[in-house]
Figure 1 (spheres, rainbow, N blue to C red):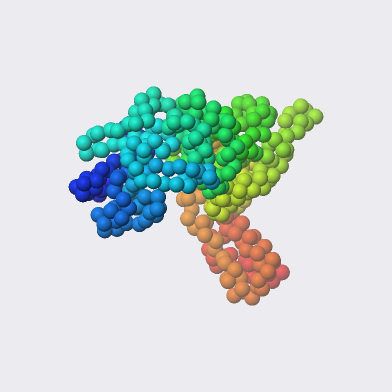
Figure 2: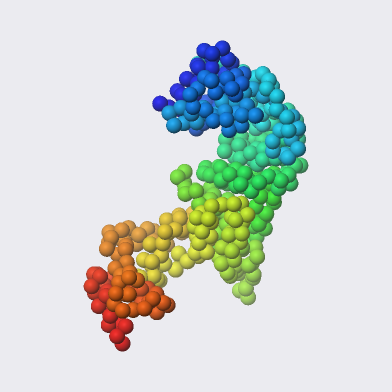
Length: 437
């Protein structure tokens, strides 16, 4: 059963029991925009205990705040009691929650477009906050005083930018002025919450506008301060006719395909992060950034750890930043070295990074086309994918573990990739001969 159908059944169950119930928040916003919602949230005057009694499977994730999860068909639906909130000492959670009516529940929400209540069974829409007009005008506006809304939950500062970019809306002037005025308060939000918003912000097709809004709002200086130095950091016009590093990065973000890997926006953001620190002008008058790949990898690791990224993603992004200059030398590489590169677990990410790097600068894709052809050719030779010989094979030959064995394994692998060996027996015979010398 589809999520929407299950949500409607939950509404019907609440209505049949005599309770008021509505779809609320993002799902209403998306339905009115003609976009299929990913999640369905429900608000009701039923108390948590009453919700529990109506549905066989529930979880009281925030029962004291009136928030229950209803589990149906292995899907979760948030069912929350109408409430009013007051006092936000920590800039995240209310100090006091009182159960109230639907209007009070709408008035506590963040933005007008998220404050709409819909009964999709009767097509009745309740709008106490002017959200329908703002939705039609493509305007993002806080409900009530912007300073108060951002003071209640500082993450709303970043959410304002994210929603505006994601929906391609304009931020209402007073709301945007409040974001700028209170931008530093984002520092009081946990790294994990900031990371999750940035992951949504830097997705295609709105990533470039998201970066611009971060800059213009003043939030960039707090969530990714290293990026600020890329603004006005000039590059060699021979390779970068587009202008400074910031322009290069935003052009790359704008070139991402819809199915871009989750790590790609971050390799784009961070691949030239060290250019400001490594910039120099040679005797020929050209701008150079020697070592920006190595320093950039080090800076990337610090930034991603600060934002609490998972270790696996950090490793993939950092390695891609480190190697992003490496692909340009591919046509001159020995066959074995080239194929080792093609077989790296991060190579698809590296290759897409390279393609977009070119599109965001000189627009020449000859290296990319060469690598794609080599990758296709290698795929036609599955015998080359797995090493012919393992460490255990060499131990069986009487070779002791240690650095010399590692060097021998590497040498065998290089010869295999160069197609000097085609069978395990040939490789072992060569290894035996090599160690006998």
